[in-house]
Length: 615
Image (cartoon, one colour):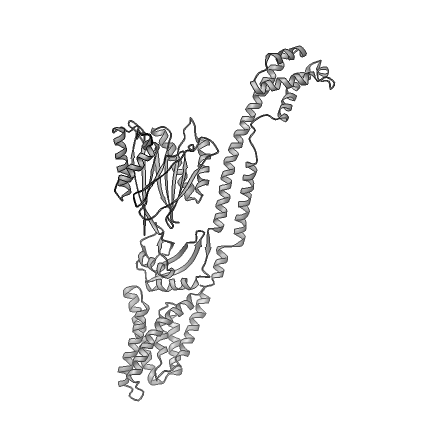
């Protein structure tokens, strides 16, 4: 709020306080103490308030009563300032008790010095109760009055139409470029136009310098046209002319051998050009996918969050009020409704008196005001200090996850060719990634490490899983060499709902152990990433409940169980293990598998396990 806006509101409160001094009830003036206490809790304009209240008392109160209420105001001021000095905060109830208690004491004992205007004991008690209640209620109203902001202006700054339109224009441009690249089709064979151009190139190189060119290619003579037609057909089908075509060509052309050789060379060059053209189109498809992804991100940025300050201004004011009670000054507060429907609060805060306040106290305030379970971002400081900091609060998910891993490296290999990651995003999504590099050792490790690293980067940047995998596959096709491919296995858990999406590209089976002990198995038959540009993504969605476990494994775990149906065997192993600790579950699975292999580790083995529990 601007200084100008704050100043006139403080002046208005000072004038209101002066006018309230006129109101008398049963010979008492309860609004003097109550209103002063409610407004004095706000740090701004205390001197202006005091001057206004004193002016009102002098103008409207009897001279014998002025001393009583002036002393009450002094008691209120001292109590509030002492509380702020000692505890670095002052609760509204403390100010209300000081106002009511001070007024009651002065009403009783002040009567000794003013016998003629002495109030009754009932009136004194009534006044004290009224002062206490009015202070509690008025404090909220005063705070709301002072903290009221023009939320529409903030909304205009947040979702400026010009910038939103620019983002839309960029997104449409990227989509247009992507469609243009995708519209360019690969050429699998030569068409009639291509054959005609090849014939013109051959005749241009040889026949144009021949004395009999005009005779051979006369419009009335179609012999050479037929011979060249058979020649090109042979070259297209077999790569060389057959004996009959050679004999026919020799019969009608003195340079038959030269023509045949030249034609073969031209066709070979045309095939090479076509191969390079198709390769270029493949690279353009990669660019098109990336442009599509950029367009998606821009569109997502436009619709990611909706500012709801205007609709929830009462809650924002309540949040500031309750934070002040904890000794925290909220300089700026905004509420957003995200695209998934959840609420986000962004606060710029610092302590009012240079002390430190525990973050958990502010978290309780935010949760109480919004009536939602809230939590600060994971990297947030544990205390609020005198420095102004920005804190982002998110709705706390209904579930939390615990995960663990167990792995073994192939006998004789320096490192494992398997890599994995656990990524818990601020939006309540847990992403488990597992990649098995083809082969073993350092080379396989680097390939799978690249896959996991790129996946994490794409997902953190906000790309959908499908888009991230396609971009990853494009990068692997360009990067890959010597048939180095990697599998991709992703499990994405929505911790708000428990809904889990599975994405598999050449990956091994994933298992779900339910709380009742039943085990589900999800299989994959697709090729790994990096094999070809068109990637086949196998996707499935399952619902997880409290106490359910996810188990992800690499091929090395299943291939050496030495049974006809290894997936069913592993289902039985997972079902028999009685533990609620994910890391222990993963370790026990590997221990059981090793019993089947006779203690040999013939391939890299990795087991990821994660459990979801209700908060």
